Image (cartoon, rainbow, N blue to C red; front, side, top):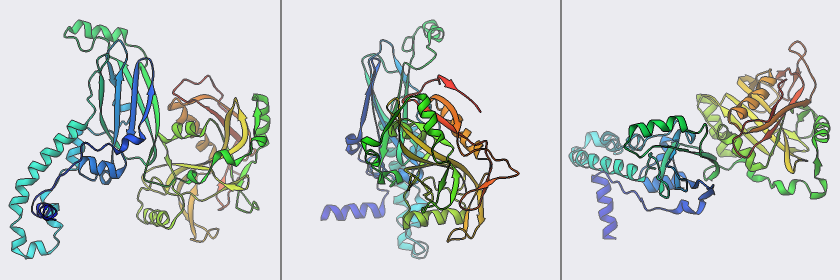
Amino acid sequence: MFHRFLTLLQRAFTIYYAPEPGLKTFADREQTQETPQAQVTAAVLSIQEGHRLFGVPLGRRSIQPVYLRIVNRHTAPLRLYVLDIDPHYYTPLEAAGINHFSVMKRLSAYGVAAWFFLPLLLIAPLKLFTVGRANRRMDECFRNQSFPLRPIPPGETAEGFIYTTLDAGNKTVRVCLYSTGGAGTEDASAQLSGLAEHPSGPAVDLTFLIPVPGISADYLRRDFADIYPESDLVQCDLPELTKRLQAMPAATTNAKALKHGDPVNLTVIGEFETVLSAFTARWDECETITLKTCWKTARAFLFGQEYRYSPVSPLYLFERSQDVALQRIRGSINERLHLRLWLTPLRFNGLPVWVGQISRDIGVRFTTQVWNLTTHRVDPNVDESRDYVVEDLLRAERVNAVGYVSGVGPCGPDHPRHNLTGDPYFTDGKRAVIGLSTSRTHPRYVAWE
């Protein structure tokens, strides 16, 4: 009790900084992958773990520590390329500086009384004295916990944290290790000779899909193994797959299947984990619709704010709403791409086949079709949105092959069709068919329409 009283006094009159650098609760979620050249272990801290380990609320500043442990099994030094993990990563001192304590902020916590009652202002010198010490300790903590950005000699291990931007749901972490050739030698000519010998690609290129506690994604309500019984699964060769995809429903519907909505203009082939891994490095998952997420959505809508995980309205196919919803937003909730996927009973080369719908929100408008009298205005050129997905996955190097099959049928801007909320759309009527790769690769076949 006395110790607790002293702790309370310390927090009241000084800058209290108490990180837990030995915290290892995230170790239960570590993932390890191995190649002949390296063993790589990765984990992502939750918002709560980041706060405890580093002693400050990193999540409020959109900072997320990613833990890495790399064992070099190569005959040459290996170096981590951090930009492949996050091109917007923070250096240790940058991450610490964003979280530094401020005396004025601390004093303002006492409210208006701090400026009217002189005794409370007497703590200012003590705060000033301890804030510098606390910030220096914070700098040291972030430095000591960071991953060392230098070549890892053969047979040695490096570990620590990379300070990345915040993601929730699932975080895709790409770990690329390059052989540094002559690195580590004092002979400058030997180091420069490595420029000619440097391979065109990384010696190690691994991708992790790591669950991060924090949101309740919509797909968690689905057990994909139970959607179709084994007897309903259809194994397809390429001609059979083409035939069956062309026979798939042309457009989404409402819950009662009485009205047609947006065209089903996308097909993705791959295991669920491969789909998430390919998309979540560049797209965000969608939360389920609850009172809390509806309030967050309304607040983002009213103030034009960003809400990366905003729920999407349900569309229906195969008598059920979407199995997976993903989105890619711009500066506000009113401008984003929506991607909905449904699992089909089809299998191609043993892999699940998903069909989906992709559209781009470009603003808001009034409508009598929904209860709240407002809806997002959809870009009528739905083919652009479809091909955006193709290009995005090609750029991410996660595509084996791309082709097109017949879908909803063509309609032009002069005679558009309309979705469930009355937005017009025009299209060449094709569905893109994308075969995903489990790792980064160059596509074997790309057919553009």
